[in-house]
Length: 329
Image (cartoon, rainbow, N blue to C red):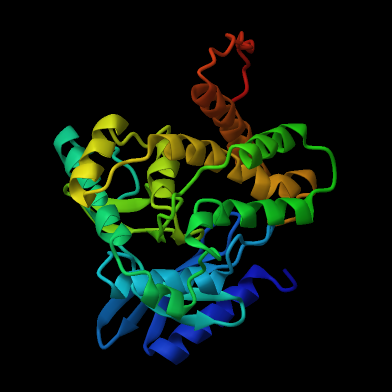
């Protein structure tokens, strides 16, 4: 990035005051790999809270940032609880949305409230998957050339990024992509508005306050939302997925395609290394190297387990390495 973080923050502040009115009484940038600002704007004695979400700095976005904003705005106006969008900033490239309450996980949440929130999310997914895709496509939300390609369109964009940034051998990714090309997840013509990186929301008191992070959402196979959710379950914990899938069938009136779902899950485990592999090979000053490395090592293991599940193979036990105690943290 050509200018300092302070200069970018000042331009964000100027945009907020110029376009939304009022006075920015607090603005801070989140310390992470992607520019995100939290801002409080005071108008007529009342304070409104906003999030300003910027472009990635160490990898190409799979879908353009403006596409992400468009999808989020369309979902909001079609009754899906995403944060309201307030505008686009050209420099630094970013869009402005409401900041929502609640928490991103279930820490300190009762079992009853967690089950209630997850059921609320399932209801949201079922409603979203039932939406007419026409106004979304007319607004510019991306879609595969044919309905039959809906299950591979998103992965093709990931592979394009991978191919365009690859600078050395990556045998594991090539093996996995080769298998997927020979055995692709078949959508059987299913199409719906999807978020794809599913399971991301804020919840409070057993309800979803907002669905978040539609960065890779598009018009695709709805089974992709049910599949990708499994990977995030390793850190959040949503409940029994056979029970959740049965509940989705009840809510949506459609059958869960387990064969496609398993292949979509395997495909999604590859997306971290496909996207951030170059940032690991040649990190820049904005790269959160350790976070990217952890994601890739973790999800490559998930990929191995997912393919073994599909092929009904028992993986060998790996002996873990143990470190000696150290006086240093």
